[in-house]
Length: 280
Length: 273
Ligand SMILES: Nc1ncnc2c1ncn2[C@@H]1O[C@H](COP(=O)(O)OP(=O)(O)O)[C@@H](O)[C@H]1O
Ligand SMILES: [Mg+2]
Image 1 (cartoon, chains in turn purple, blue):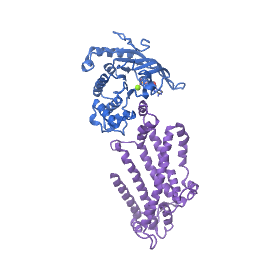
Image 2 (cartoon, chains in turn purple, brown; image 1 turned 90 degrees about the vertical axis):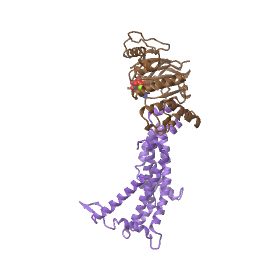
Image 3 (cartoon, helix red, strand yellow; image 1 turned 135 degrees about the horizontal axis):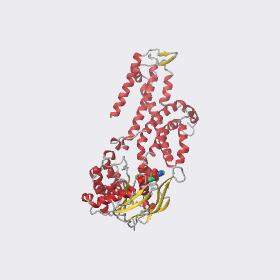
Image 4 (tube, helix red, strand yellow; image 1 turned 180 degrees about the horizontal axis):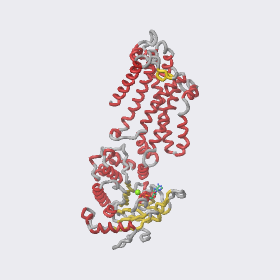
């Protein structure tokens, strides 16, 4: 409840900053030594928020569906892609973390590549997998793969840290109970890792949204919000508010994903209400 | 049959490396059934190491450890002992009750049995009203009592305790000492109790085993026979006599009045000086 209030407060602050800058900013932007350091504040570059909201209500093209329906359905499409990518990525991240915790040699051999994987630019990666679309999997699934590629990383790293977090005495206690690797994992390592897992999942959620949006654009997949942003930005000069409706949709999508991920914590972290817990 | 037999055990950590440490050298120790033996000595003399060897958490470099007639490893697999460390080491995501249930869970007891047994143990340590609390909501002393209840939950024939009351205030400490004594006499549990408090060792034990450092060895084994183990016992001359005797043994000066009596199973190297 309190959290929802903070989110609303954050939105209000963002809106106030936007309109505030529009009110005081130079319509031609602020240029220093030939470099524009502050953006233009005119109606073409930064339409009023109410113009954007009003644009949501009007049809996309004359006689077409209202923009808000188009944006909402595009967001839903991307949400599906994000969810699939998030689940696949989180599962892979979990499995990698468990494998790395179990076998020292896997950690040594794999961790550098896990980290390296995130330095490959997404735009370079996308064309490589784009060819999978329509052949071995539907085009949207390719975008999910890209989302998963970004989402697995925080989970793998955070979860590995979490699985390694129990104290030596906790591990010895389990050994004194003659508990093997699996039962130590279930009873000790996994519960100790939860405070590390949840921040990692939140990062993974954000990464999956970015992956889905950028993935849609770079593979040219139709139907999602990423594609919509590109389509609407072509009309930026004639209809500047339109592209911002799509961006607003992407922002809301990010918030919804973050909210859904934090809902996951509620049933699993009952003791957290009583205890301060380390975070990543 | 003895509860514990440690036979010529040497433990060297990091053997062959520059940071090689001989934590224990040629240690012999026998704990009889139902006996409470304290290990006392300066820090770093290998008390925890000896306890962990008995618990099969580490393996001896040479020598053998026997627990209840079997190898230490076998005894651990059969959960033949309960262990409590200096830090309570409770699982913070479990309630107090579920913490005490943990070893029972791993033994495969049914839910109802576990709950009944854990509640019984919590009553024993006086925490029955805190079953639903989380560890972070309890004071250090209460957490330690939960850890003791957890160690006792499987009703082990052998109890291993590593400075369990080390971090507690004097009052809690004395109360827990009495509770522990009550439990041990009630159930006939054999106990190995590590401490660095002389009075605690003398008050609790049938026998105080004194160790010295570098390399860790047993230097004396002092049998204690107090008239009673209660507040009167803490005031008795016998109590103070034994405290003096243990202190002198710790300092390495031969005791003035009664020389250290070597009891059965006494330490090798009693008169190493
Ligand atoms: N896991 C370990 N690795 C290396 N050295 C150790 C290890 N555990 C204990 N030691 C060393 O063994 C000696 C005895 O330690 P310990 O048994 O903890 O002493 P005590 O409990 O009597 O204070 C110390 O010198 C300590 O540094
Ligand atoms: Mg110690």
